[in-house]
Image (cartoon, rainbow, N blue to C red; front, top):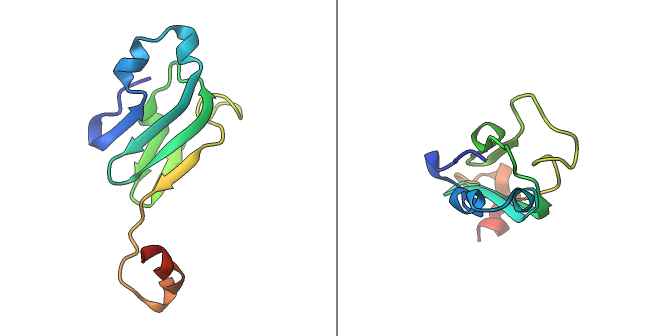
Amino acid sequence: PESMEQEGYYCKPRIDQLARLTEHQVANVEDFEVGRHGCGRLLWPGPTDVRQLDLPSIVNIEPGHVTVYGGGYKPEQGEGLNKTCHVDIKVSLGKQNPSNKHLQKVKE
């Protein structure tokens, strides 16, 4: 996969660690994670094939918003990163107003 270190992105395992793995191991990375400091993270549980992924063009994590394969091409369900993942995203609740009362308990 391509590096994502620009703009606070990271992946686990790190790119340098992935570079030392065999092709079979890179095709079966356990619990692959991509995140952006201060914004959130995505975790693909179980084995994930991360060979030949251009992560900067596939994953976009912004405050309150995540996009995977937003640029058009998307592999078949279950291939690459087009599979179930856990999303942990940081959101800003902003100023307190009646329309976000349902968020009060989350903020507290």
